[in-house]
Picture 1 (spheres, rainbow, N blue to C red):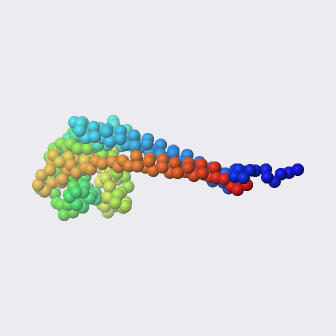
Picture 2 (cartoon, rainbow, N blue to C red):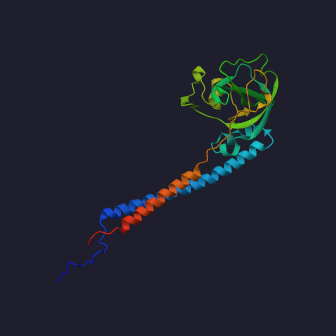
Picture 3 (cartoon, rainbow, N blue to C red):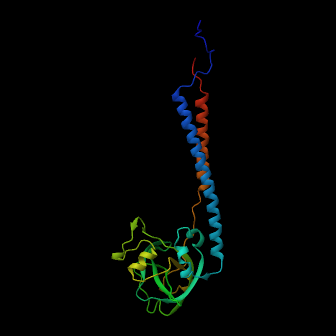
Length: 249
């Protein structure tokens, strides 16, 4: 004879499908949050290594600016980690009448970066960011003439634009230092796929102010990792509670 008292008081009843679904979703969320936390730990390790390498470059002696043989490698996106902020030097002559201004906001206020093409002794053309100029700046007589030696930081091109605006080559409005677009607009032919942020060595009365490059890296990966791991713990606890919850028998 069937006994309806098949479960003792307080025994765990068969778990309905809804509860099993909740457990499964909680476990899935736990796995996802753990994966994101681990990814942030890996990103933090990469960022710390990048910071250490860049700091070593900033304190190193300048080397000759990379020539055409190295340009294809620097053109690749991955070169940003390997080459950006290297101290380099180049000598040559600035092309007169080819200066381009790109929008800038610095510690000296709003204004422009002054980019000029430098033709080296070997005939290579490199865009040089000579420095910051205010909106009403006018080049002093003889500025940029003769042979010049530039020392500064190698920077990777900034395509597209900036300040939430796209570059407008047709009207000479530049919001980023887009090397290829500037070279095409100015008819410069083949140029290096990078530009040089000049240091302050060439500063003088009325000249562009160099050496204003800000080298800073956001590194909040530890906070992000702890956040994801905390969410993983909460999701895991929710799965545990859902699995252990008792239903009156």
